[in-house]
Structure formats: C-alpha cells, structure tokens
Length: 312
Ligand code: HEM
Image (cartoon, rainbow, N blue to C red; front, side, top):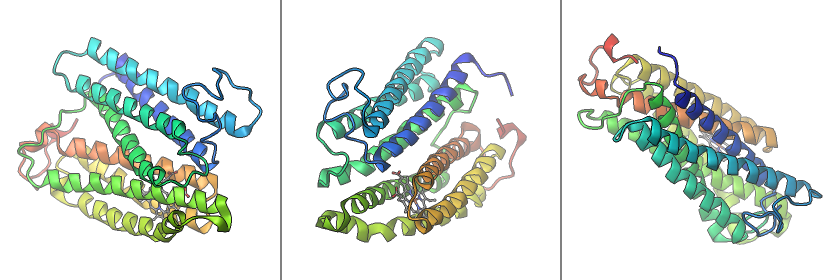
C-alpha cells in the first residue's frame, strides 16, 4: 500500500469530523435541546456567542459550532479536490457530491430551527423531516467516504458489465437506508412520548404504535445483507469480501445494541452507540459496494475465482 497523500489524510479526517458532528446532533435531539438557541439561525438567541445560562443552549450551540466547522471542512475538501485532481477524476466528483450534500444538510438543520420543528413540536412535517435528514446524512457520509477512499487509491466503480451484483448491492444500500430512516422516526416517537407524558396527540400515539416496525425492518434487511455477503457474485474480490464481513459484523453488533437499547429503555449512551453503529454499518456497506462494483470486478464473470490482480 502506498503512503497516503495529504489530501487523502485530510479527507479521512473530514469523514471522522462529520461522524462526530452527527453523534452530537443525536445528543441535541435526545436531550430535547434543539430549541436551545431559540428560533434563530445562524445566530444563537440573537447573539454570535450566547449567554451560556442553560444546558440546552450549550448543547445546541456546541452543535452549531461543530456543524459549522464540518461545513467549512467539506467546502475545503471540494476546493482542494478540484485543485489537486485533474478534470474528470472520480475524487473531484465525489468531493463535489459531498459539497452538495453538506449544503442540503445545513439547509435541513437550519429549517428545523427556523420553523420550530424542534424540542416538543409534534407537527407532521417534523416527523417527515426525520427520515429525510437521516437519508441526507447517510448520503453525505457515503460521498465523503468515497472521496477519501478514491484519494487513497481505491479503484473506480463501473456499473456496466456487473450483472446481478448491482441489484444485490443496490438492494442492500436501499435496505440500510430504510433501517436507519425507520429508526430515526421511532426515535422521535420515543422522545416525544417520553417528554409529553400522557398528554400526547394522535400523531405521537401513531409513532409509538409503529415502534415494532423498526426492529422488524432491521432484522429483515440485516438477514438480507448477511445472505448477500455470502454470495460469491457479491464478493468478487478479496477487498469486497473483507468489507462484506465487516458489514456483517456491524449488522450483528447493531442488532445486539438495538435489543439492549429496548431492554434498558433507551438511555443516552446506547442511543449514541446505536447511531454510531448505524453509521459504521453504512460506511462498511458503501466500501463493500464500491469494492464489489470496481472496474476490475466487471471483467470477471460472476462467481469466477478471485484473482490477485483484482485486489487493491
Ligand atoms: C442492524 C440494524 C439497525 C440499524 C441500522 C438501526 C438504526 C437505527 C437508527 C439510525 C436509529 C435512530 C437513531 C437516532 O436518531 O438517534 C435507530 C433507533 C432505534 N433503534 Fe435501531 N437499528 C437497527 C436495529 C435495531 C434493532 C434490532 C432494535 C431493537 C430490537 C432497534 C431498536 C431501536 C430503538 C428502540 C431506537 C430508538 C432509540 C431512540 O429512542 O432514540 N434497532 N436505529
């Protein structure tokens, strides 16, 4: 393996920063601190540096600072990618897509605050925004990951000539999005039901009734991912096989933490661990998909013996 360029190291750092910001975002929602800065954005309670009298203000303000840093880091990533890589390079494309998703992420975050879809708000649109926000987060992480991977010498992806592999892996990626989006919806239901006590409305009651849907989806999709990981056509190269096993490990760990989450009635630490594992599972699955759909894999017929040349 060749030494990583400064750009590649920066890209991996930007990925780590974004994961941390996402986890802190979960602390903001789990503690009901989304309105800690009032309905002001980007100012916090009308000031650049707010008076730090309340814990929810500190939590939300820290999220604003770190998410602002993540925004600047992704913009720097895109600018640097365009300066350091030639026109048409996949690193440039992935960095540009990361830039688009971080802009959408910031707009989604700002709209939650400006429209008051935070804290104990029980509007339908807030429920709708939960999975939208989660899906954009996953796409953002996927794009930054591919920027870092490709800048580190990862092979280009090619969809033509891959046969049923595209559907196998595409199914896994869509399924993983569904798992996390359904988790985001029930997480909101738990928060609102827990904080509003008996007085919650029909919408929150519906979210509470949907609780079982998320584990059911997570078990079904997890089984699909495990099944796919052991199919030769989904693991045509040694790297694809390694990442497939990593994904399987993340699924099993996530199932366990999911059950602990329920058994302990969702304390903050299992909530954060569950979200961290959801991100880890997603990143492993993206790496597996990119390795299985690599250009060199397209030249191999499905199920053919794995060649050393295909390894990266
Ligand atoms: C491998 C599959 C799974 C994935 C990818 C996944 C993903 C997620 C995600 C992304 C969230 C939202 C976290 C947040 O917004 O803070 C969530 C919430 C949740 N998940 Fe899962 N999950 C999986 C399996 C399970 C299982 C098997 C169970 C239970 C048996 C479970 C129970 C829960 C619960 C109770 C919540 C709500 C936690 C809260 O109130 O914040 N999950 N899940």
